[in-house]
Image (cartoon, rainbow, N blue to C red; front, side):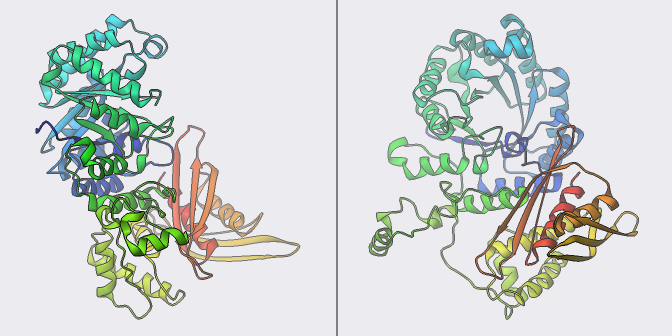
Amino acid sequence: MKPNYVKIFDTTLRDGEQSPGFSMNTEEKVRLALQLERLGVDVMEAGFPAASPDDFAAVERIAKAITKVEVCGLARAMESDIRTTWDAIKEAAMPRIHTFIATSPVHMEYKLKKSPEQVKAMAIEAVTLAKSLCDRVDFSPEDGGRSDRDFLVEVIGAVIKAGADTINIPDTVGYLTPEEFEDLMRYLIENTPGADTVIWSTHCHDDLGLGVANSLAGVRAGARQIECTINGIGERAGNASLEEVVMALQTRADFYELEHGIDSTEIYRTSQLLEQITGQKVQVNKAIVGKNAFAHESGIHQHGMLANPETYEIMTPESVGVDKTNIVLGKHSGRAALAARLQDMGYQLETEQLNEIFADFKTLADKKKDIADSDLAILVHGELAEENQLWSLEHYELGSGSGKKSFAAVQLKNHETGKLSKAKAEGDGMVDAAYNCIKQICGDHGILTEFKMDAVTSGIDAQAVVNVRLEQESGHVVTGRAGDTDIVKAAILAYLEAINRH
């Protein structure tokens, strides 16, 4: 690897996916993994195989599907975790095991209940075993940002000797400032035996909003790998954002003088795919990929942009894959135009899927004058959500009025049995009544802890997008997302999608 090359290690499918509200099923993980490969990440951490059978299956599928990128699995410093991880990734073209153990005093005493000597021994054993199975091994001292520096040097030196290829320094709780993180990374590189034989990496959380700044500070100190996620998702406040890290290195190449392998024109497409899969919208002012990142409303800004875009844009929209052109789709558009636009948006669809979406598109086009990309994304999401579903909506009737109790009648189809089931119920509003019907048919799948509704486009004919979140007593969380010009229908479909994902 060239000395001025920074590897991008994407952990969206692991650290990002395990955060509340961002869970994905196996098919969704594979779709995102294929897009990450297209984006050009150097490594993708596909998951935590020992966490659950579903996680194992997803990592195994991804390992078999990806051919151009290293596929990594996370494992605690335990023999069972490491062997399970290897079983999940062993068929990958370039497999990689990432093992970790906490090294900070608070973690060792209260979480691990182990002495520093025991932690060091476990780290050595874990790396030794991982190296006997896999050519590429990463080691992370969890909560490295709050660990004793001399103990870090001791542990890291030992695992390098045991065969670790990459040493990742996590600021697990986002505690350090950029100056502190750079100083820590520089100290470790200068004082650890064998430091020049490994790649040093960063993993910075965003609890204080410093994840990206800390990652770049680590690179300044000599790190040549950055662990990050699409849209900055992850535990608590999230991780360093891939798009921000990459575009900082690219836009300020004069300052960092470093290279990366990311195709930046795929950034926006990847961000949008993650948003569509999880139903979690990117904030409008999010750097690089937010709706307003390349929008200008101020008259002063508009004047400057017309004179020269460089007055207010330090990078072009095209450089991150934002298309400035506007292809209007409406009721007169044909199948070929729709297919071309969906392909431009990053969707690879089978003929049958396209036919179903085209039929829905024509129905929507009769209700709306102009169809935006966000409308198309909802149509695609709805079609993909219908595949392999257990319950689907067949029919519904609603009623409400001043001084009257709202009521609903809902008919659902069970695709395992082929049986149609009907229910009638009252409720506090038509959505509540419809949900009560669904509970009668499908059973109670948890408490509705979140109900959000947005219009994906402007105007009275906009599609309503409803996001719901169900939480069980066990803490298991599922989300559902659906859109329709009928608000109540969108709410029903979103609720059913959440139930189907249990």
